[in-house]
Structure formats: structure tokens, C-alpha cells
Figure 1 (cartoon, helix red, strand yellow):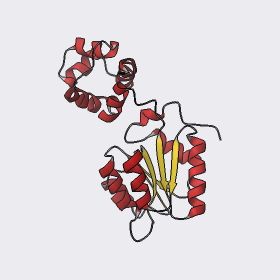
Figure 2 (figure 1 turned 180 degrees about the vertical axis):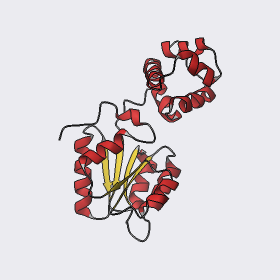
Figure 3 (figure 1 turned 90 degrees about the vertical axis):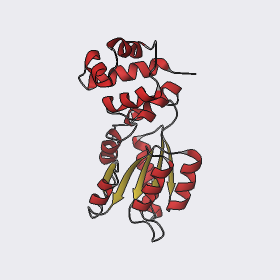
Figure 4 (figure 1 turned 90 degrees about the horizontal axis):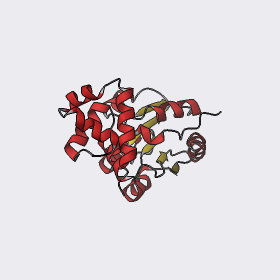
Length: 207
């Protein structure tokens, strides 16, 4: 069942956050003001080409808007954590779970099982230790995860800034110099590159 109401409310909210009027958005979209009005009233939805253009104008991604229309955004957010030191992995998963209590969080000690999981179940966010085993480091794993889902938010975990330039070149969503902390997790989750609105109201800000 299409969730046109959620789509309509969200694009209006995003437009207002951008400080745009309906005529201004219509001009950027190269459509009539009445088209914007009908989208925000939920009486019509844009086709896929217009949806792509709308995502760029509103600073979000098309997948997020499409999932809103299809009613998929009420599903749990899926987060994976890949860390080759078991104690750190356990602590990281527990800490992220505290920050996002309703998320589905899975931990892995290496890349291959994480890839298998994502192929089968998908993932929205990946916290990846860069210094994994010689077979596949975190940067290489991130590229493979993006092949599965181009809109995954890869957040790197490392002990230094050595790989920051490469991470930026690969268009990561975040880069955390260890130790991992709750404030830094919240900061990265509030500034995701893709589908950050899926976490609205789900982040726990209590220490």
C-alpha cells in the first residue's frame, strides 16, 4: 500500500528546512507550482525522473523518497559493525544499540560474513574498522558493500587519521578516531550521507 501521506509531509518539511517556497522549488524542478502543491497535499506523486530531481533539490536521496512512497520506512534500521577484536566488537555493538535501541544491529569479525549478510538482508549503516585482516581491510570492504547497496552509510573506525583522505575520496559517511563514544555515534548518525531521516526520533540522547 502506498504511503502518500508520509511522502507529502516529508517533502514539505524538507522544503521548509531548505528555506524554499513552493514557487522556488517549482522553478528548480522546472514544474508548475500546482505540481508541488499537489505533491505536498498527497493528491499526486511524481514519476521516477521527477523523484530523482526532487531528491537533489531537497538534499536527500531518491531511495529514501521512494521507500516513503512504498511505505518501507517504518521498518527497522539495520546497522552492521565489523571489528576484528572480539571485545571491541561486543562493546561497539552494545554502545550503538544503546544509542539506537530500535535498530537491528549485527556484529562481524571479518568482511566475508558481513558481505553475505548484506546480500541477503541489506544494511543501512556500516561501522567498519579499517584495520581488519590482510584478506580485506575496511576500505576494501566498504567498496564491496557499496556494490551491494550504493546508498549504504559507511562509517570508518580507526586509531588515526592516516586513511582520512582515502575515506573522503571514497565518499564515506563518517570517520571516527577511536575510542568509539556515544556522543560521536550520535553525531555521525545525525549527519548520515544517505537516508538520515530514517533515524528521526530513534536516537537516544540520554547518557
